[in-house]
Amino acid sequence: MNLANLFGGIATIAWLVAIAVVVMIVLQSARSQPIKNGVTLIVIVIIGAVVLSTVSAGLVFINPQERGVVISAINPAGYRSDALTPGLRWIVPFAEGVITYPISKQTYTMSGLSGEGQVVGDDAIEARTSDGQQVKVDSSIIFSINPTEVVDVHITWQDRYDTDLVRALARGVIRDAVSQYGIEEVYSSKRNELATEITGELELKLVENGLLLDDFVLRNISFSPEYAASVEQKQIAEQAAQQAKFVVEQRFQEAEQARQVAEGKADAAVIESSGRAKAVVIEAEAEAEALELIAAALLGKEDLLTYQYINQITPNVQVMFLPADAPFLFPLPDLQTVQPPVTEAPTSSSSAPPAAAPVTDTEAATVTE
Image (cartoon, rainbow, N blue to C red; front, side):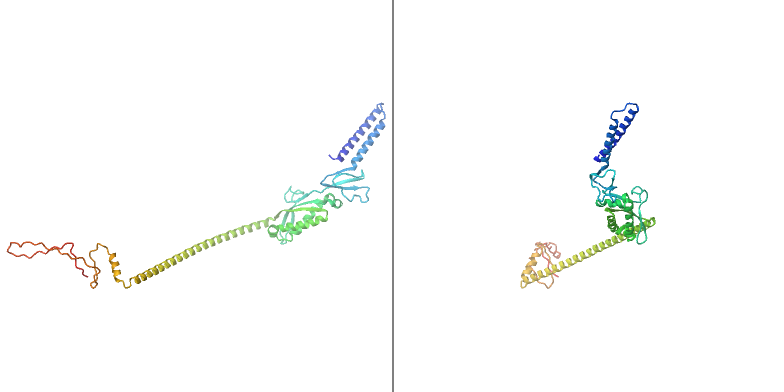
């Protein structure tokens, strides 16, 4: 409780006491039992109540979030030009009065949903876009009274500054701004630009009338049912088109991947074939070079060649076939013949031809073509 309210309470009690004293003195006088110095007591009590009431009427306490406009009967203008600042202030009792105004932030909401705004029911702002489409805009204006212009606000708007000033200005500015944009720009690409434009224009108009705009909130933009249905169909069609495009791109990527794989395999085959061919060429060149070296080494050394040939023959080979006109490469093994055993002639008078002698395994065959 501030001091001004305290004095007001004391003054009220003083008047109650004064009335009680007067009643008591009158009753005692009616019973022929007058109170000594009753009249003096009544006067003192009444004077005390008047003093307390006067002090109470002259003291005004202004809260930190308020400013006070003094309405004065003794001032030619009818008011003080300066507002009362926070604290305990004094005014002329019974000749001046104070009307307080909040300088803290206030919010005025206009919404299509019941219970969200200051007006019960659908209070959304109906506006028309540049292409003739009707939209409804829900918005909130956060503002405050300029502390230095409280008196002017009181003179111009009194306590109607929110409904008659903020509401009217906001609805007009929003309608004008929406009319500069197409329907698709309003709800998509240029919504932020629209909100910025409204904020700037509304701020200028409020400042001209003693108010400060803290923020403008573009809460929602709704459309007619017909246009909302068409937008939904358009979005469905766009999504289907995007899906088809995605499928086409996927198929293209798969084909491109298959082509690259095929090209990779073909390149690998070419590289492999080229490698094999180069290997064959290198091997042939190396073999030719080796043969050339061998031929150069054997030039004029026929006996060495014969010697190497003989060394390569399997040691246990007994028979070889050679051309008829070729010389022997090596000495033939010694032909050993087995002498037939000597036998006596038979006693028979008849003479039989002699039997052929058997040939042993060690006998060498003649080499013919």
